[in-house]
Length: 162
Image (tube, rainbow, N blue to C red):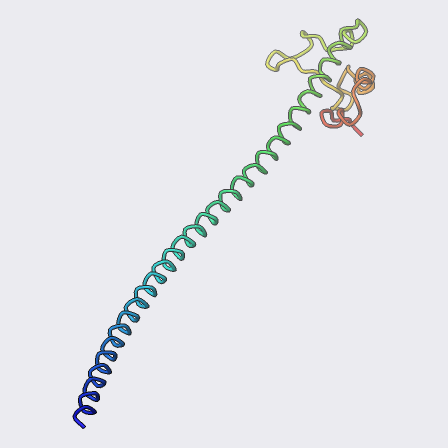
């Protein structure tokens, strides 16, 4: 019986030691799980911060892209307007050059108003027939001088009476 009690005491001791070891192991496991969970939360927090930064950069980049796209569209529009303006000026200069070249012929010069015919307070102007019956330079002569310029270009720069 003593042997059984001694064995029972040894088994009880072993059981208590095992339960203590189990409790220590469980504590270590809980501590490790908490550390792992904290590390995962830190990683997730870091990923959320990085993700927010990336979203902010994407939004900023998209807004910058849209601003630059609008600026490009505006510049293209301005370029088109400037090109049209330049085209009109070039056409006008061609028309002017053509008129000057055609008006240098003696019959055209004779029909132009002379400087002494004009009042002194106004600069010399070339009347293209805008006023009814007041011009020595008729719209017919004007049209004859401009046969090398297309009718569309003439419409842009000249006003013909109806």
